Length: 157
Image 1 (tube, rainbow, N blue to C red):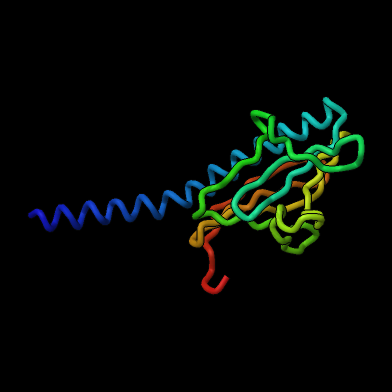
Image 2 (image 1 turned 60 degrees about the vertical axis):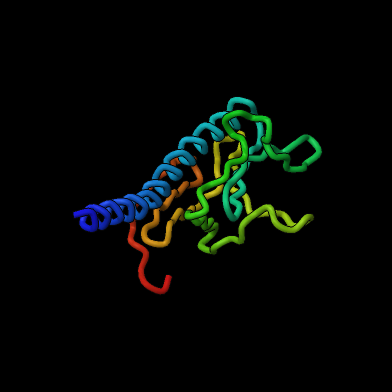
């Protein structure tokens, strides 16, 4: 009897963990969609140029300063840099090409999703995945955002 209960508990824990990381991808996609919408509104209202930089294990928002340099919004309570669960992967696609994660080499400009004061945005697709399923957050040049998924990850991709 104890063995059967132990097996059932371990199976339940395993199923929670598998579904858990897939849920994390969806939750992170929803969070990022809301943050991007907020950042776009902020860019318009403040006549500021903002950007999203996707890093290997997170993302950050930046503002273009008067000197033409991008500065992280580290002190902003809402648009602060964020880390994602290590079980998730982030893949930014711009103009049909997968971009390397930002925040790497000093002096190398990371790829950015621009959120301009005019209301225009860089068209992009961001794939959030956990190895079994993935969610796709896409934005067009007019700031419309869509979140789609879950899509199963095919073998070998």
